[in-house]
Length: 208
Ligand SMILES: NC(=O)c1ccc[n+]([C@@H]2O[C@H](COP(=O)([O-])OP(=O)(O)OC[C@H]3O[C@@H](n4cnc5c(N)ncnc54)[C@H](OP(=O)(O)O)[C@@H]3O)[C@@H](O)[C@H]2O)c1
Image (tube, rainbow, N blue to C red; front, side, top):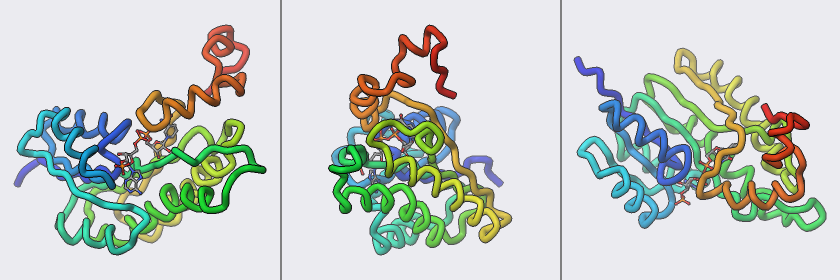
């Protein structure tokens, strides 16, 4: 009997997934971080101090074969956390939003976690996906991230029923200055009063 669990973090090479990996490793747990770029995974592993309890694995969450390979290679897992996102083309004014870019947001944030749930197999502990404040307080240009985050919350309710007794949750962060979202946040701040730190400090708008 061991109390060391193995957690897969898809999106663990950056931002909140990386922070979670650091916390779990510090707590003595076994962690695999996965993402599309081996360079980013290697840099993250180096920053995490490459302990023996850390593995990296390539995956593209929108590619079903890649997701299946990931779970086949890793074998039994206790927990899976999905923080994968690519917002490089995920915000645009409606009139300029390309359909392919809109589909990419939905593919990564909604269909990706759905593929993970479909192929996670013998997962015994929990599946956690990441929604976000845009579901309730969208920013200008954020039609697709608002849609994806809201859809995810419906998805986890359905998955919790279908995968019971596995625990399935969505966490919904507010704005966090990560490598991926920091530049988006700074662009939106200049155009959206409720994201302006000075407005918030005066209590005019209080993001929750
Ligand atoms: N930061 C915020 O302000 C904020 C607010 C609300 C909600 N959220 C949500 O919180 C989650 C984490 O955000 P974050 O800001 O921490 O993200 P981040 O720093 O941009 O990191 C995203 C991670 O996802 C990976 N990734 C991107 N596309 C992928 C794909 N197709 N397959 C597998 N991995 C992929 C990236 O690595 P590669 O590019 O190498 O694949 C990277 O490791 C996301 O769901 C985001 O929407 C964030």
